[in-house]
Image (cartoon, rainbow, N blue to C red; front, side, top):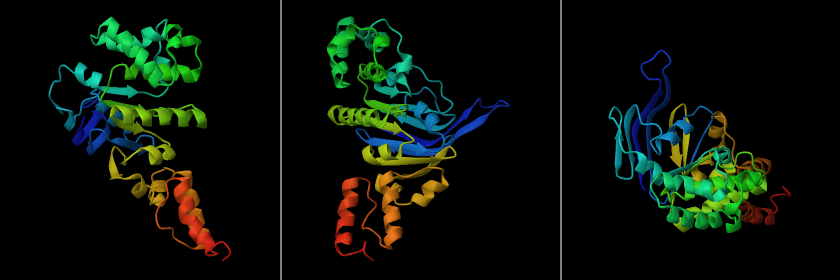
Length: 290
């Protein structure tokens, strides 16, 4: 499912004394099957942009195209249920949205609400519970008896049970330890590939943006500052620092290495393996001894 923003602006409480501009002249294209990260300092417009992806918000200026659905500013919108079924959003701490008495009922709630039969909804629950790394026996348990990590996976399963074409991840690893964060992000990466999803990651983690995204949208002050690959994005750490953002630890270490030994590596490295591959030939020539 392709998504495009054309000169999109958004104001909260427009035409009132409390009008607040959140987006201005946003132009972004997200290709079907792509994996895009959206980064930016708090208040840059990331969350507002995210809510346009399934028409929770509609633009006050410009045009948002979601698949074949064109949403223009100033036009009354009807029949948005189909869009919201096709675009699944995993919000921060999704486990807080669990409420049913069993895991199965919680996962089935969304599909049933959109007209899926009970039989089909239960079949989807059995499928997605495995896709999130849990077992079918957990379906009959109360979600509130589970660990925090299990509850988060159940909540994610509920989104997947809608069979979305687009998966939007809003800080999906918030509150998790490093191992938990890695496991969840790897799970999303596998789902992205196996289901051919269009994945949009809104994150403060530069490591996750560098590791998983094919393209990064950098936002500042409600507009798009830059759209580039992770390597291009993190090749200018000073620019990111100006915007109140960090760089991945690997990029930070590379920069210190280059400054310490007055060398420039062949590329901005995004993984430890890449960095080692660039450093070893220099070390072999005695750079470290210099």
